[in-house]
Length: 172
Image 1 (tube, rainbow, N blue to C red):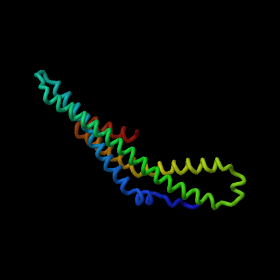
Image 2: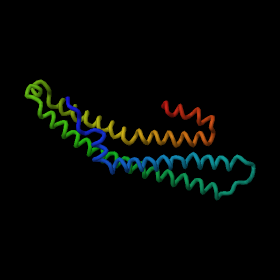
Image 3: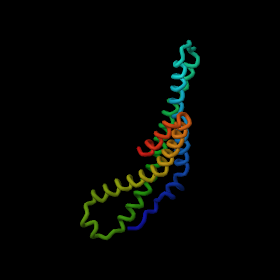
Image 4: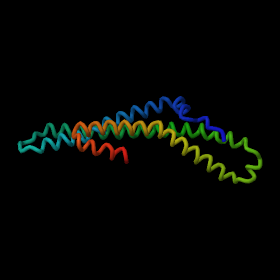
């Protein structure tokens, strides 16, 4: 069987804007994901001492947490929409290419195979291939960035626990 024309480089060239958007949104979400543990750490630090705690730093930390969580929800919404749009576009193009090749098969192939099975397999396989390729182009780089950022934060905060947790996060 010939190699598919819709490889990584076609997805990159045809979906450049969507992939760039997904990378930017992913980087923003990694940054915003640091707000919650940072602010919880600040709040915990405020209540460790014996002295009276003012409401201003507490309210400020809670507002930061709420704003960060709202921003993460909005980013997640746009990531889902962009991913869906890119995936549907690429699945459509790839499916047309696959069906174009299937139609070139000989008549014996169509006598031996049920049309429903051919159709179902072509549609499922193209969707699976496109999902894998898009995940490889967007999900894997963002996971690597997240591991790098969170690993750095853990090591800077507590080098021993960070050094223990980074290999566990990579193994996961």
